[in-house]
View: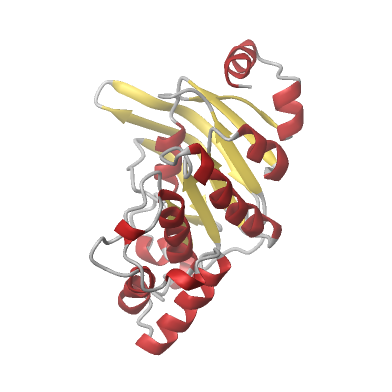
Length: 255
């Protein structure tokens, strides 16, 4: 694992993720307008909102896949917007699962899980394969290690992608609409894996349209619209008794 600078050691008392006055523009289009929020350790925060509200951009800013225009993002107390931060060292603690599975099509499920371990973590083949097999079993795919992505369903591919992220031993997981590209009958298996992770105490930030999952598993629900956080709170409370008219209008269409 890459080492942090001595003055950038992890602060275990700090929130897992802290966002301060975050702005993000693409040209003249301001997508995020002064976002402030945090994710505590062991917490599952679900982010909902209409398309174009800035949800995925926020998530991608959290590990600097998108470059913030201004504001600060702290991961375990380390300011990842500071140019002196060893960004790859911080990123190694963050697992990311995307809407698309991004598996290597010419590699087996097992090899998809070992390649990053060997290159980024410098693990030997035997150790990487042991960890990969443990995580394939964790997502219910122990019997698919020799399968290529083309021979797996979309749900199975997404579970392989989750297992790949877990094989890097992250402190937290970011999910960007992980079920939205799946056929409806395949969604449940992926959500079951995410429930299991939540119950095991994994810190998770989840951009999702799955309101049932947000209600059942989430510790906090964040509703975004127009690049701002409109409302946040206990998921059941927000879903059943939204306070803001924009939240009410959105939920009336999706629930």
